[in-house]
Length: 171
Image 1: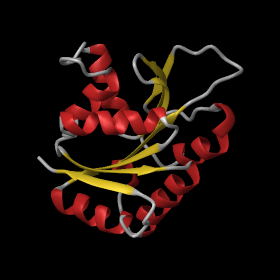
Image 2: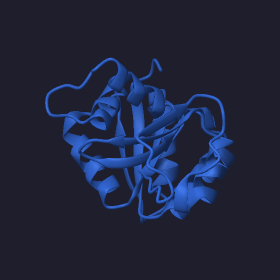
Image 3: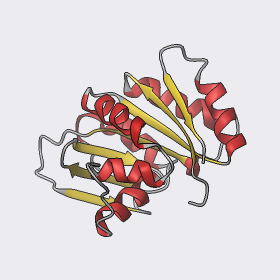
């Protein structure tokens, strides 16, 4: 991912996040430039971590229909237990950033693995705590990666939902 520009929207429910993905798709955004992150609860399994950059995941816990529907659109998927944050389910380019942070031990300062992944895609450190706190409160992050123009256009569209908390981060 060469562009370190992003738009991050926080949604209260998976339904709102899913609608935003559909809205961006209908507006012509490349869904391979979208990432989504939310808490994952696996009551039937004791998974420490799992990620893929191609195959579909067959089971994602209580919100399986939501996550399963998104995997057909997004590039890559993961379920990981991130220390300091908890169990996360995610899809899109953020998966590669998180795995890179974990594999390369790219944790900087007091950042969690998720924080390091967000920082690596251009999210400033002072915004990372806001996003981690939102995830811990069972909210969902929708991240649009791309050029400055793409990110600004996505932010405009996402801000039409008054319930969404939308921020842009440009390099």
